[in-house]
Image (tube, rainbow, N blue to C red; front, side, top):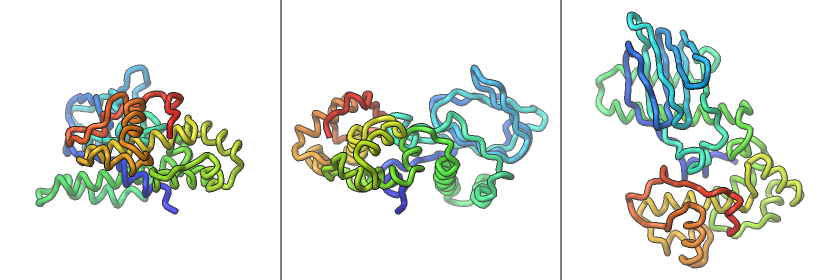
Length: 284
């Protein structure tokens, strides 16, 4: 069982490279997640309300969400960087963003498994070959998956879906929901898949994920639905794919959970999904 397969199939993280080279002046980053690869020189990371962080060896810096931060460098030496913006859908709109630390720091000397990908990335970053931008973006996509995998396996995520996937029992139930959102899951069904009693499963799930199993199922269905709608699928086609027998029932839940009616427009953006508190998501 691959607990990430169905999750990444619907909400895969995306990266877009925007800087490669030597940074010789202060730079500020806002409004999006960021992934930075420091390959040479010295770098000071400044964050409001937190102490400065200094780096002088090859290091990956991952800001999953739009936390404001800036880089200060020695203007004479500068810092060699490759930088990308990251789309996770936000802590609410995409389960991958739930529970991730504000900043993940991975020195390459301590994480040798990342080195081959970083070497490929650097080779593309400072080349003039055709397809360079596409190659960089896809390598960063792969790095994102490696980082998420590392964070989960290291136990650094305390709550949210990634924390649940780190628990073998909850991972079975979560994967079942991710793979078959249209199935009429019950609490008993999910507890059985997890190999737990109904009461114990419900308690563990809520404590680890932060919402009830059925509440999470509803949110996941709307996440999948939002993606289908963004791809141009009509509401009446999306409804049965996420477990609703009628477009009216689906539209009612979608509007309540997302705060807006469903639209089958290519302008619908998964990034815009704003979820209401899970406690208000009562319908399956």
